[in-house]
Image 1 (cartoon, rainbow, N blue to C red):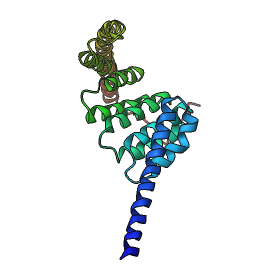
Image 2: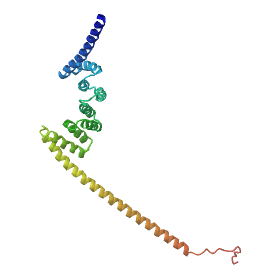
Image 3: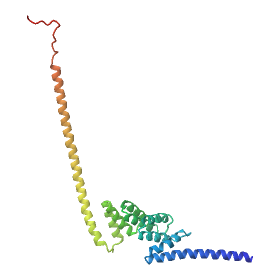
Image 4: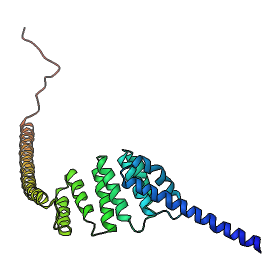
Length: 235
């Protein structure tokens, strides 16, 4: 009985030690990350995310550490793996993925990730702002304008309010100009098509008239008189 109790005590001790080691890896990694020491934080956070029941923040800190070190593909891979296990911070996983795609110049993919972040948290203002920027980069001006307005609704006291409102004025003018240009282009296209059709109709009528005239001339001509076999010349 005493031996059994000793065994149980050892199991409890080992379990507590493992939990302590896990907490230490995350805590130390988090501390180094916050102290702006990503290279030192990475090995500790890599260990922390492998532990059962790893804190969601370990994935985020690891990805951000990779990002700071310029290891963008690894950061993206960590976020993709971590988002499937995320409950509390799902919007942040997608948001950070969007930021990585932005850094890589993949603005269409970035916009998709910011959309996922908004789907996870519809009140997360930074996702609207960054999606607006991504949409602006791919010339999706109308949707970018809507996102900027939504961001200002969520963050009315934003320090960027004046510059965003100026950008919105320019977008409004640009969209109006684009719509006018599109209307002019469409009108020109229709006019060109009408002119082409008219020219084609005239050519068709002219050719038909010429064909009718040829048929008429052919029908009026008689048979050619032939000569007989006995052709004699005066001597």
